[in-house]
Amino acid sequence: MLTPIKRLGQNFLQDPNTIRRIVDALDAGPEDAVVEIGPGTGALTGLLSNKYSRFAAIEIDDRAADLLERDLPEARIIRQDILQTDWSSLAGEIGADRLHVIGNLPYYITSQILFSLLDAAPLIEEAVIMMQYEVAERLVAQPRTKSYGILSVALQLACDVRILFPVSRNVFYPKPDVRSAMVHLRFPQEPPHSAGDPAFLRTLIRTAFNQRRKTLRNSLSRILTENMPPLPEDLSGARAEELTPDDFVRLADYLLGRSA
Ligand code: SAM
Image (tube, rainbow, N blue to C red; front, side, top):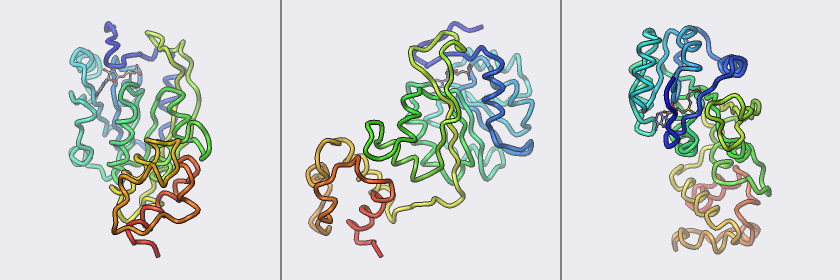
């Protein structure tokens, strides 16, 4: 057993039923390529590396990697910061077109990991990931609710998001301060709602939600340029939380003169 390092978000799963349920949530066949984020002491890793021959796990803590290499010699452990991981090189190394991702995430970087998965969307088939319950609620939130925000819009545009089940604090050592949930993301082969300029779309979403209490007329003024048409009247007085993910795509295309 390792002494858990709080700064690395180390809360290790202890309960065999929960562990089994998480591994079973992955919709992968034995030939598929599976990547685990943050294997830690290997709660999920043993089952996963047994089940999938094309398996790799990415771990930043050398102590955990040493332990895993000793106890699970068949598992491929990559000592790396997940935020520095180049998903395309990784898929190439494993020899896979699309990856199945799984992990009990280090919660301190959940959003960054989600955005890194979004950036790699064409290479990802699905992700079965544990996160803080409130973050999971943000991913599935609907417009006009408190939880609806950047993560809801960005995720819902890129993939189908489902909360699979809540996870009790009691199944971890040490017990986290927050509630947890398992989430399933399924990435379609073709992104369902893509804007002409995805970078501008992301800026638009971020800018609108950074000042979510303001009307779009005010919150977006910083990024609206002279070359752009004026905001449509019905949106000008609206707030970010009133727009659906599709509305954001249409608005981005409209402002860049790409609308049909
Ligand atoms: N999978 C194990 C389990 O369920 O018991 C451990 C999960 S623990 C919540 C998160 C794991 O992510 C830890 O092993 C931690 O060392 C690792 N980790 C933290 N930051 C990381 C990073 N930037 N890149 C890769 N792994 C990281």
